[in-house]
Image (cartoon, helix red, strand yellow):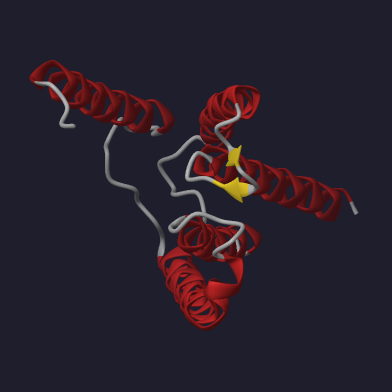
Length: 176
C-alpha cells in the first residue's frame, strides 16, 4: 500500500525544516557566522589522519560484517550492523581529531558545539526510550532499525565524553 500525497508533503516539510535547523545550528556555533570551517595547517594534517584511520576502521568493520554478519541475522535487522560500522568509524575519526586538537575549527565555539551535541543526544535518547516503551526497538528478539536512534545517542555521548576528557586532560597539563 502506497503513501498519500499528504504523507510525502509532510516528509518533504520535515526534511526542509531539518535542513533549515541544521544551517541555523551551524551558524550559531561559528564565531564568524560562516558555514565553512577554517583550520590551520596542523589541524588539516590531523583531520587527514583522523579521516584515514576512521575510513580504515570502517572498511575493517564492513569486511567483518560481510564475513560474519550472517551470524547476527537472527538477532539484528539488515542495516543495523552496517550503521554500527559507520558509527565505529566516526568514533575513531572523531577520537583521533579530538585528542590531537584538530576537531574544532578556528572559527567555532567548542562549548556551543558540545551543547548542540548534548541536545541531539537527548532527542535521540528520548526517541529511543519511546521506541523501547512501545516495543519497537526489539521485536521478536530481533533488534530493529529503530535502534539507530539509540546508536546515534551512544555515538554523541561518546564524542561528548571524549571532548570533556580531552578538556580535563589539557587543563591538568596546563596546571601541572
